[in-house]
Image (tube, rainbow, N blue to C red):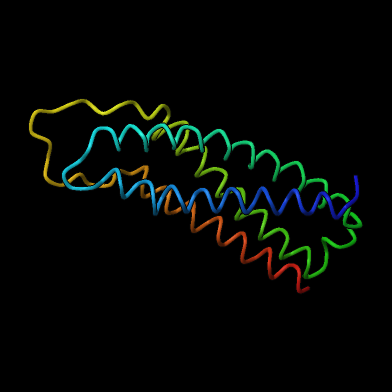
Length: 155
């Protein structure tokens, strides 16, 4: 497979992942936290989140595979000892942190996103959960990876 095609697949996976994370956090989640809460909206947000989770994991696996191929294809260890290699290691470090945060979010804090219990008198304000705060941290980390990756292209 040509190198430019691997690069495009890598970019599409990164764009899909970051765009989806931003959409879920800043478009879908606020609709679930409206006042008064609507059970149908909450269920729609929950189902959309579960569907995006599958797409996000496909994107993450694609990023790992295409990124590994590109890294191995970049003249091996000769470039690792240069400024380019240092910035690449920073990018990989940030990606590992983002990947770890996604693991924590998907498998510990929000493993199944169970449906909310119906209450007779719902609270006037529904606070954001730790999972929502972790989603924001994941977005920041993925944007940091994107920033370092864009700097990497200038070296």
